[in-house]
Image (cartoon, rainbow, N blue to C red):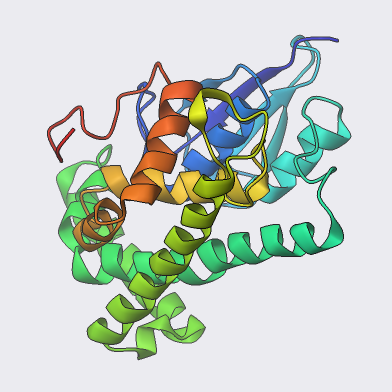
Length: 266
């Protein structure tokens, strides 16, 4: 099999650390679960095929001109279709596939908007300063305001922006409680074949697509300074922390741990 050349554009400086984007962390987890080597680069939404982060440059043989691919779910499908990665859903039953899709939807179509509200509405300044760190100060102010207005309008249209802050906190906490319940049940099963005592959200011995999303949301939530409430919720759930810590130590041993910068207890 030829060795592909893959570069992930994450929207943040290329350092060996998790970034604030849950989808960038999700994509990295997908590649690591597949055992695929890759590089990271900063990139920018306007340069992506769909105008958003993350996206990848993929050369299937490592030598040909790279193809730009966006959307984490479509990237995963392309890796499978091109024979570069195992289909993480291939051995799931129809019911398990539905459960896998439900977990991803809970995170990506529900929790994402609650966390976006926390980041852009409740913690605007740290979010702006991090997301737009590469811009000079006057431009940062202007682009930040434009981004805030666009995000606020999107949240209102989606529905989250019509809720009160306490209501959003309640719904956000409920999502994490549901995730914790699933992981608690899975930790008791510890599917056969799982390395290093790991356990996965559907209870099997290998990760599924749901685990790429879940790890992405946990890792990004733990390192994001613009999401202190989310970080506190995650840290209050020992099983979620254990799940993420085991994946980190097995699949991301070269990355800074979320406790390495003193944000929490080890």
